Length: 357
Image: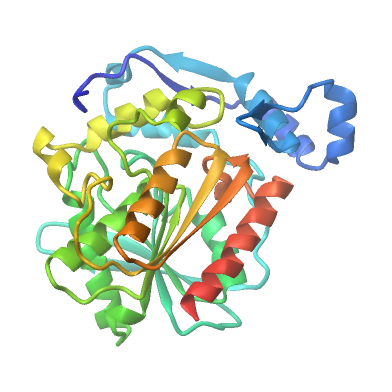
């Protein structure tokens, strides 16, 4: 299948103020009450039971669903980003951090462009490792702003400094633009903070997890100093988008298979990229990689490819751990107001602490 195949439809959520108020009330309701008033049965797929609060949340989102038959009908990618990301504003989707976080915005200056990077420093610093974080959004969406609530939560419970990079997005900047930005940010972080790159851990969600793994692979192939470790939250790894989980969860669970095909199409520069292990993570780079923690979710189109990437790393002799949350959906770390998502986020943070030790 050619990755250049065009996408015919893309789903997004347009949330009005009334719906925002409903969601604010929803997050305060206990699960037993939701069961009482909704009369919904549990969603079960492949012997996995979807968290009930998450199930109702998806139903509420679907009430406001709209379909865009042709994403190219937008005058610009910025217009699409505004429509998709604007609906999150004002929603209480994230749990509060456990301690005060100092936030500092930096600028990485380059000859032709500047990159923003946001530093999160918890009041009680417990780890000497710095984390370089890459946000998700299919390489087209997302920013340091969209992931700010999650990273405040993340930094507070991890007890570590996190640096969140605003890398250049597609389709304006094709592969390997974001990879170059990530490598520049890693070297800047080490230099500006007098750190060895071997003490910096890479982390990201979805496309950001792909970018973290891509950066580790790039540095390994070129014989450069490797980061300490990498934590990959439900990574996108396979441009074919044809795994069983892509089919089983192709729609109705926040991320869609069609969206993934479209995202890959926006990022790819040419079909030659499909043969590059920094782009197509299903390819074995045949070099040692940093120790890795991979997080997957049961009701996620990307679940199978995250598991397959864990197997690829393991079979190549790398140290890897995969943790699977069968009752959750893609993007759950950005939805920690959902009790099950909050619990899973705290759990994976605990495992990440072990990786950093």
